[in-house]
Length: 625
Image (cartoon, rainbow, N blue to C red; front, top):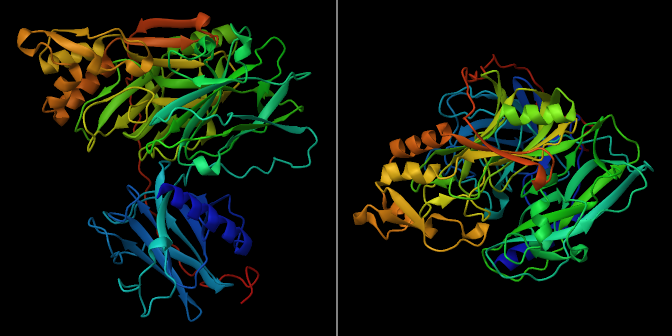
């Protein structure tokens, strides 16, 4: 079935590419997105606070609709439906009830029709609404969080004066797509095709068949070209094989030490976290580029470039590709990454740092049957200050962030603390989507000064999952990471933390009533670390029960889960501060949790009086009548 779906999507894309017409929007919009896989439903938008304006171009002469959903389904969604009938445009504000189904109109109309027209087989509807939720219970606010955008259209206009449940859409004419409405990467006009200074470099996987596992981490070593002088990378983008679109989960490119123990491994691949891994890969920890499913190209600011070809710096890199293969099919993949670089050097060198939680081990544990469980990872001021002192800078500017957790992730927030006072979040996604991990442009750029601290808060739900969830590399396990793009470059590859070793086991003992545990056998690699590898030895009445069984059988409540989360947050922390990009320069030390004396208080957008008197027809120049 999966193979058939891939074929149908590819086939329809090919057909539509031949037959599609492109109708220019009524004005220049900074953002646009096709919401459906065969590109029949295109959404343009712009933000002029407190308003957001949409223009829909849909290949139908019937009704069209979009909605903001809490989870990608109809239930509890804020919906707008419009159509053009007998030359007149119509727009309705609707809300789908908790049980889903046909969305009735709202008591209040909080959308404003700007224009509408049918032309060349398309229906075009332009409207605006406020970012705030102006009607209790029925309207949903638009924030910087990931938006599950619903789309649907019918082949005919409503047969009466309004849309009714009898005005059906076809099953294939509906769906959902995650979009960043307020944190979208804009189109970059600076990418000039004819600029002779621009060149490209591709680093791809070798297409060799690998073991049929549900999850697999493949690592391949490369050596960069021998550049005659320094270059600046200005664009980074993924190259994903279309046939493996459902399997390639994320890719990370690391810089490796200049001296490899076995140069013969250059160009070869291995399983990253296994006994067969190349010894060199565990020294490759400085990030060059990170991509995860749903993300697109990354453009650097006009005065910033990522340096390569620097004399004396390493030319060896490692591409780590995470494959998700639940159907356990044979996969041959040549996906990879592509860089666009220039000889016209920019003012600043860019850097990428990994911020978050130490996820490998027993310190990241999410108890079963909890709707909300928070994990904290910090980048302490002591780490940031020491690296800035070493580099000789007083501040850095964060330009983009990519948030990364797995299937249980629901919310992620990167907090910024200065002298005990929490500043506005650098990024805050209260509707995280595992399948849409877009790099978020930070505008205006955030200045992090010497003495500041960062804290990443990840909120998970284990409801509907069988058993506890531990930290690890598999998608069924969890991570809590943020990849931060900044300038000027400092020697900070990794800044992560977690409760000091043994904290989670000790706190769980207080809840579950055990006093001692022991490993059941030697642990050989990171994949094997887990609560099932430890058995309770004291007290006697609980002896010989593995920790995972004890945790899964315990009647967890929200109060107990919150108590465990708070205990882990406030326990002594093990801070890992990679100040050189090599394991030899890694600092690991114990510190206290970050102190926040004055938490940041958010203020909700308020509604303003709506405007009126907009035209209900688009101008003649958009398309022929």
